[in-house]
Amino acid sequence: MIAIGVRLGGTRELCLLAFVMLLAACGDGGYGAGGTAATAGCLRTQTPTMAPAPAPGTPPAGIALRLERIDTVLGLSFPVFLSAPPGDMDRLFVVEKGGVIKVVDRANNALIGTFLNISNLVSAGGEQGLLGLAFDPQYATNRRFYVSYTDLNGASVVARYLRDQIDPDLAVSTADRMIITVAQPFENHNGGMIAFGPDNYLYIGLGDGGGGGDPFFNGQNTGVLLGKLLRIDINTDDFPNDATRNYGVPPSNPCVGQMNVRGEIWSIGLRNPWRYSFDRQSGDLYVADVGQGSREEVNVSTSADGAGRGINYGWNVMEGSLCYPLVAACSTAGLTLPAVEYNHGSGGCSITGGYVYRGAAVPALQGTYFYADFCLGFVRSFRMVNGQVNNHADWTALNPGGNITSFGEDAAGELYVMTSGGGLFRIAPP
Ligand SMILES: [Ca+2]
Ligand SMILES: [Ca+2]
Image 1: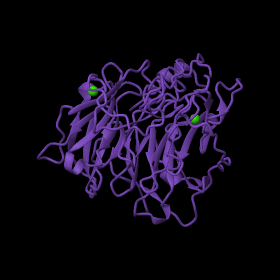
Image 2: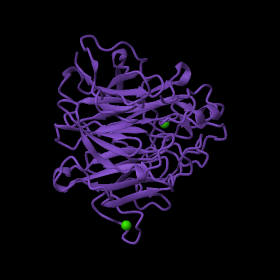
Image 3: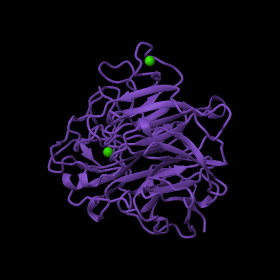
Image 4: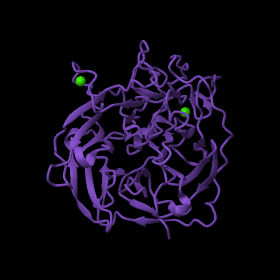
């Protein structure tokens, strides 16, 4: 039985008790204070206007969904992610926070085996662990995949591994290449999501470094990588003399060539972008950023609008659409506000971002984005239509019970939801 400390009033003590608050909107000891918005010339300066999202209602009439339990024989320990290689309709790869990736037969939900076990490299306390997995777009031919974890020093690491040359259900146990290591000042807010964009660059989400309130103002500091969404080219090495950085910086990144600004930056102003995703059809970017003590948020940036390029998502000048801290006045100039947010008043604590549905099992769900709350365990959805939130809905039939750590998307575009207690479910028609 895993103890879950529920956040009440946002006190630091309760957050420390909540050691499995993986997504943790925790740590607000009150010593943070709102920062000043970044002024780097490479960032977007226009503040988009958006009508307030409607409150969630009942699901659209005529669409019924259920959770199909698939963890029955898997014995999962704290699953935090699920993915599959492009085009692989036969298998699911489930990431356990402790450092193990398991392979599951998609047809009968049977455990095929352990794909990779790097638990000896991973610190797995609190929000730490093996947190992300991304298969190379050319995985079928180059056998490469990428993992994101906190190492034994607590630093955020992205490393490349290879599938075994013979056995497709097994990975080579040692890393093929270390991609990047970013030191973390605190144990919380590690981000950890990694995903290839439609441009085949690797996007890396990093939280603000933690501690509560962003005490070092990393979110708005364009000279550091924490509190950012990064975009890198994993097929080159622009830093041949630096063993800790083995990647390229795409020349099309917004801040390349700017003085004192990290070229890896794609978006800034993030607190803990625990999960984000690209709509596999449209390329639109959905970033769910975990809030401090008041607001949880989903940000949507269309492909036509650059899919997050140069966007300042606001933290720690703002938390959602509120100034941070609440008592302060702030300017929204240059900041992009969320498409959807919800507050902590009803027990919500930490957003778990999901995916836009592009599967085949429920055609009426096409284009619908799902998200959840870690504490409340609700699953909600909405659709973006002409830049506005439509059909915002609360799916009581999809509440799995327990703490929702993540969604997953398989090669066919079907979606999954999982819980810290080991539950794994497919979102399915009745
Ligand atoms: Ca290098
Ligand atoms: Ca924000």
